[in-house]
Amino acid sequence: MAGTMSPFRGARKSIPVGGADLVRTGELLAGSRAVLCTPTVARLDPREWLASSGDTLARLRDEHGVVLLRGFTPLDAAGLAEFATGLTGSLRDYDNRSTPRQRVDGNVFTSTEYPPDQTIPLHNEMSYTASWPATLFLTCLVPAADGGETPLADSARVYDRLSPQVRERFERDGVMYVRNFGHGIDLSWQEAFQTDDRNVVDAYCAEHGIDAQWLGGDRLRTRQVVQAAVESRVTGRRVWFNQAHLFHVSSLPPAVERELRESFAEDDLPRNAMYGDGSPLDPGHLAEVRAAYAAEEIARPWGAGDIVVVDNEQFAHGRRPYSGSRSVLVAMA
Image 1 (cartoon, helix red, strand yellow):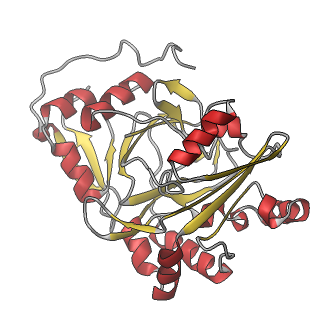
Image 2 (image 1 turned 90 degrees about the horizontal axis):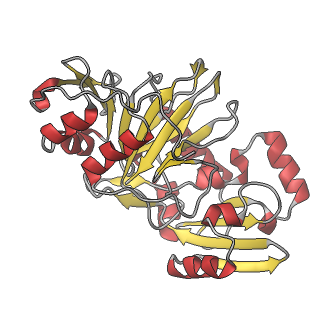
């Protein structure tokens, strides 16, 4: 998809800018820390505002966790990359992939390409690994006809809602993520690791603390134990930071979970999660985690041209089902 002509290319127009006073801020939604920024002048390019306003956007991101820019000149993939690197200096690739995405331009990707009738549970990006992006940048090219919101949840408030028993068990043992590639279900290992060379996969896994087992044929099983919670690098608060509830087979619709359990032994499920010591997750603990996310979930419909900047440790995100076309791009820094 790289190199495709965009309807936004060539639309950038320079205007005089004067910094932070060109943008007004307000609550994104009542009761949420997230902040909404709107321009006070027409045709304000977010890249020019970023360049002229010093550390305003970085400060808003750190203080509020989520910043929605609405009413600015829309950005295409190349524009999003320029905007994101203007704030963070560089973008990272999407390695050790867990969902299907397309590379659009450099390190700008489509959002997860799951069928529109499916919900993507709230989660922190790549929290199933030991190395995750600090900041996410999303922009909406085409909003859904109905639904398709990107819900958000304050990760510190999710953590605080959990009982001490749940927090203690997860934090003591961490989370083990188990993935089985080669069944023709979920991603292939070639797509997940972006290579067809097994030696490259072995080297990547060794470097990142992932146990890799080649099981014959084209099958690969990986296991990795990583964190359940971390301290936000910005606020110092403890935040819930894992994808146990998403990777666990119970996150699937009941009929799909039942079919997978009938087809595969526990060790052979395409993906699953357990406590770091290898024991099964307590269904009550998973229910409590999901309830905490549900209690903290906020959402606002996308508008064309919206840009959302997310501190990936402070806030989790997801996707609601939708109808019609929907196009959202993402960059990670």
